[in-house]
Image (cartoon, rainbow, N blue to C red; front, side, top):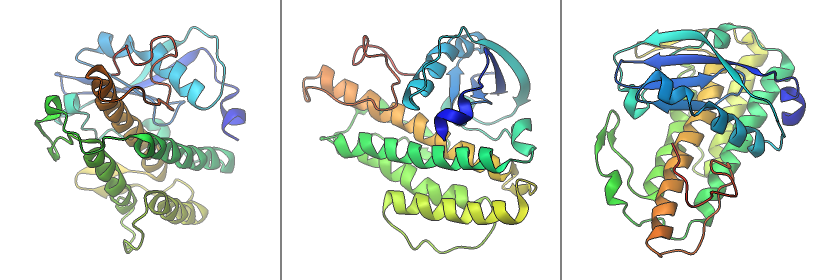
Length: 260
C-alpha cells in the first residue's frame, strides 16, 4: 500500500513554508510528515534531498531522481518556528481525500508510530540526561532524556485527536494502543465527512488530513531528537551502537553525521 501510493512521485516536490523571520519550517506536501528546517529558507531547502532520501528508504522505496523544489505556499506567523512551533494549514490539506489516499495516510501514521517505538524500545539508557538539551521551549521544558521525549510524543497523540473537538475518554495507556484508538476515531470522521470539516482550535485551523500529517511529523522530529541523544551516548562510549530505523543518516555516515 505505502509503496504503491508513492510510486508516481515525480522529480518536482511541493514545499509549504512557515516562517517567523527567525526560522523556516518546510513541509513536503507529497510526503506526509516529511519536513525541512533551517535558520534561513536556503538552509532549509538544502536539506530537501536528504529528507526525501531517508523518507523513501524508510518506506522501502528506491528513488534515483534529482528533486526540484517548488514553493507552493508561504505562511508567516509569530510562533517560535525556530523551535518547531507550527500552525500552518497546507492548502493540500483542505482538499478531499480518496479512500486510497486516506488509507495511505493512516498506514503511514501507524508505521511511523511503530518505527518511533522501535527506537525507544532498543534504547538502553533512557533516563540519561543530555545536558545540552536543557532549555525552555514554547511548550515548557525541553525533553532532555529519551524517556521524556517518548512520554511527550505518547501524550501528544491524544492532543492531535482533540483537535477534532469530538469528545473522547483517555482509556488507553499503551503507546501503540493510543495510536490505534486515535486512528479509529479519525477513520470514523472520514467515513462521515471525508476531509470536509475544518476545526478551529486555539486560533489554529485543522483538518483531518492535517492531523494525520502532524502525527507523522511529530514522530519524525522527536525521533531525530532521540537519535541525537543516542549519538551523544555513543560518542561518550556509554553505548556501542544504536539503530536508526527512520534512516535519517545513510549507512556510510551513520553515527557520525548530524541530524537536523
